[in-house]
Length: 193
Image 1 (cartoon, rainbow, N blue to C red):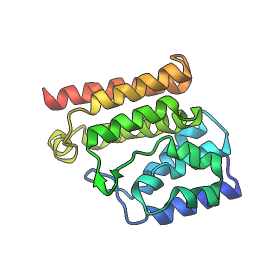
Image 2: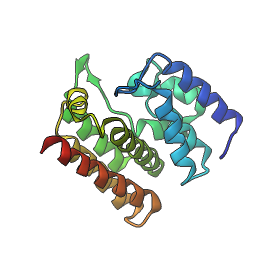
Image 3: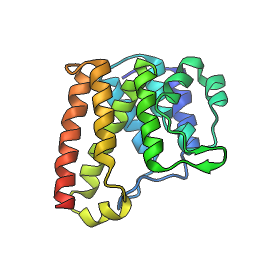
Image 4: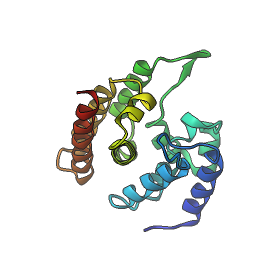
């Protein structure tokens, strides 16, 4: 695994920015566990420091007061671009954007964003799928309570399709993402049938 002063700085920044957040699920794990997991997944597919940093910071623009300008100041324009490529716009002109529109915007961002954003998105989704399977396999009612929208399969399917098309179906990250997506779909069938 790669460890540099900039990665250490990103670990500190992510830990501070997300320190009061927890993951959904019975365990309510500190949110930083997700960011570390995305980082570890990414290390299997790249040694690119900016991509690894982006994995640690991929939710900062969405879920913390940290701004794109601060991100660029602290980690450079490339990290900013990668993170912006996987960040949903939650409001526009002070109005909350509906879930479906936010997700559609996310997919459009993957279509046009930097290739490195595809790596971060794939690692993020792989961990989200794995976490869901681990946390809810014996608590399907809890899943329905915590995740209201049934349209997640459509959204995730679009993400998987864009990543496979842009990285290639045979790219190891695309293959792993597809495997996890298939397991997630099987889980959802068991929840809603």
